[in-house]
Image (cartoon, rainbow, N blue to C red; front, top):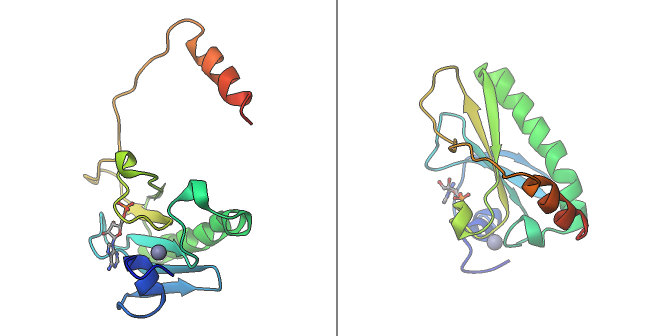
Length: 137
Ligand code: AMP
Ligand code: ZN
């Protein structure tokens, strides 16, 4: 627990939240400033800054819990789609530096924008980068 971390304080019950789900590894709550009605954030109980710092056990379980939450959102809201969004680092839009995953209900024609302008690779560039990355794995 980090005293200056708002999500640690939520997990400790010091700051109120609308809780959707809780187990020994995760707590899922309603986002206080939702992108859409039903926007949920899933917090790791253990403090770690982001995905890169996450321990194996929590990382392995994260998608199972996310799937459970996604199914509940779909059943309750009958949304057309759901985005999973997980920001790592300020440059990626992370504002709370405690691992969390967003689940955002989506509807055909809604005005939520998570998009980008598609880029392109030069000749051989994607292959070279893939090889460089593969060498690090
Ligand atoms: P990120 O930009 O990925 O770090 O997302 C942080 C999210 O936490 C934002 O969507 C905030 O609206 C949300 N948030 C911040 N404080 C609270 C809080 N006290 N309760 C619920 N959600 C929060
Ligand atoms: Zn924390």
